[in-house]
Amino acid sequence: MTDRNESVARLAQLLKETSIQHGSFEAVAPPHDWWDWYAAYMVGRQDGDSEKDAVAFGDQYMADVKGVVVPPEALSRR
Image: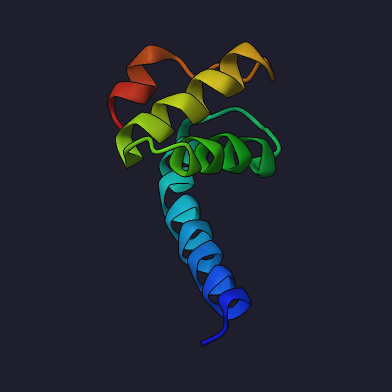
């Protein structure tokens, strides 16, 4: 496999993981642009965050930067 193909495979895996993690946010969040949460989550993962920490970063980014606030009780059910 070439370096580019390996890069595509890694990115595809990260996108799949991101879509799975976003599902629980999507279920409880008000209307939002999915790509904003995806980008925050993916930056967290690329920076070395665990899945749990990247989820928290995605949630916090959405609240702080995009104004998409999920009630704490809804987040606790995730």
